[in-house]
Image 1: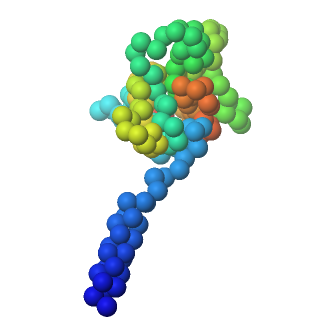
Image 2: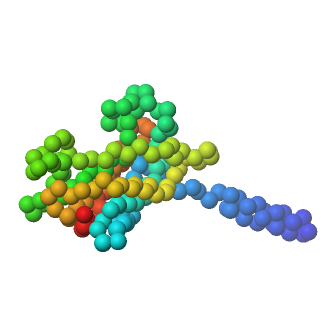
Image 3: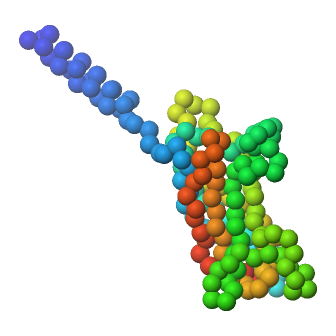
Length: 177
């Protein structure tokens, strides 16, 4: 009878230890997923907007987000779409819709549409479980509305296997420049 009680106690303790140690890590897709979190506007003493911060959250099942400084060989070479990890497309409200805007000089469009490529550091953890989640903050003081102070952004990211995330949009932002 004593041996049965000890065996039962040991079995229960082992079951508890196994249950505690077998909690699964969260499972995320190997294709990165992002969500818009918030934006913050910075103003000068006169109430004019001078800078903007956009925050997005991310999850990635294999943790291959971001690039090292020396990741400059194809497909991450300069001039390649994959040289940057994140793209922020700029839109202004024009003629009852949001459109991508080209810079203007004296009312004449010059150059290509305004887009902000962004390259962020390698986020892969040094642990056996490579699943990651977190937030990315993007700051700019380069916003100068061309046609309208109502603006928004569309954002997506690439991982090192060249998987493209979903696209997210900011809400409409009144930028008092």
